[in-house]
Length: 248
Ligand code: F6R
Image 1: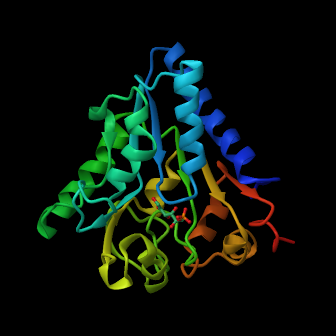
Image 2: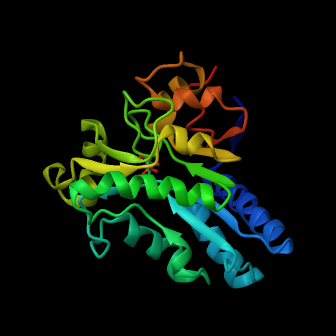
Image 3: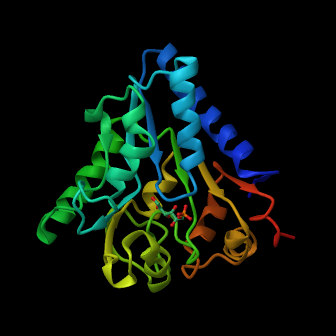
């Protein structure tokens, strides 16, 4: 599993942003769309900041970019400040020239009985657009990627899941209290993520060191869903030295 360690998350984030920009530019030169899988949370914030800078200062255009976010809480109104929809607008979409009709985020407003059809359509849309060129990921302390919590199957697709207790504790800060954190989410599956032509998992800070060690060096196990990435030949881990501190 290729792991690249950077001295700090700023340098690492700029590198990931450059990788994304290169895909966008390469595709634009061919008159094609770039199809990107995006993540939320604190980890990719620096990547999005650098993409915004590349747009504003270097003229990087997102006109040919189509995005699919990994996940959204369920239930969740897009207008809620905790929604991943709001997060993406705040950190990226409001500051670039992307066509919002090219933006896809799982819908937290569906009725429970509508979710299965929505999830199938989400997968089909990705496939119809030629698949994800790149999926970026963070990692949760449970070992989740997207919201594929322990117990997730390696071939899982987009679906409604229950959030792990530790994940809800980690999100309590955003919601004011753990009791206010939704118990469910819609997430792309491990199988969905695997189909991306490139996968980059990012991890910063000592807080992520123990789970990063398990993900990189641990036995393959549904207990740590990120270990499944060891099976991929098109994944790269980009981490800072603190997150890498427990790797052998
Ligand atoms: C977010 C997502 C999650 C986060 C993970 C890490 O869309 O899918 O897997 O990447 O929970 O979160 P942060 O980056 O806040 O530590």
